[in-house]
Length: 405
Image 1 (cartoon, one colour):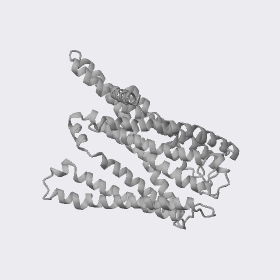
Image 2: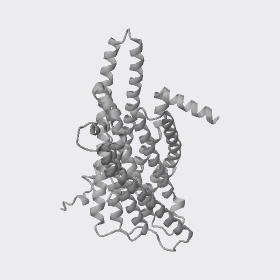
Image 3: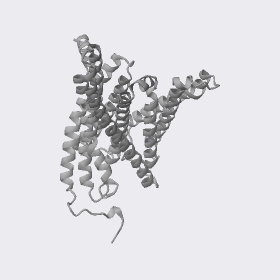
């Protein structure tokens, strides 16, 4: 009997028919995901405007803004995915290899931005958790900590995945050359940004090292950042110009993606990186959320005894508790909505037949569409959490709305 894991068969159930799978995916992706994505895009634009209005003196506002941006980009990709899965588009007769277009312009971008969302959520939860566990020791440290350090590390990981994927697809298409060049320039820009955030850290500036810090910052961070960000702009302009010419004077050929010889190795590597980032983010958020809940209960019991005669302390306690509850609710929503995704990733490891090319590929696509639906819900609901839990957020919304009216 074969011992190849790809031949593992689960006798408990059979694969779905292609018609059933298509119906499930169309309902989830085209109908539900499309509508919720449009709503979520509007909600996250409001979130970004409100947090920019409030300013970034509070470190939590930086985390919430980064989360809103990553959610916005996630919803833009799911909106594209909804359009590319629409039967009207699939049956339009356009000279396209639709699976390649879906993978290149929607699925890969979706995987990248959901990883960023998970990492930003994990960092925001970690920050609040540490400020609760060691409030006096870490409160000032987190104010000093440059958030660009964390965001740069997320971006570096995601651009490495992008480079691997485009190398997998090959370079017979000129767009892949442009996208790979863009990913490399973005990667180098983020490395320069990471160095800049380290060199500007007060811990580094006050370390007593025999260095002229301004010269070090300029030589190893500012100038490389200016160089690579300029290259990023030029590559983006060239890719847009190239695509514009292809639209104005199109070639009558079938557009798709050509794969290189080592496609399986690169595909497996990119999948492992994506899965690892998703799993790390999920379990980090889960761990920090449980820690926050336990600490919140302990703090509440202690403060009831200590603040009976301290009205000012009561008000400060309420503000802090609301902040903790808000990030806990955001993290709990993330854990609940990404649970199907984690189950899918875990099951795929021992049972490769549960995959896009395996024996149970139709079930895989049905579960995959459900996972995307849940993640879209997660990216679209934070506005309600902020509005209900934060009086400052509500006040800013009212002020902005009154100006519009």
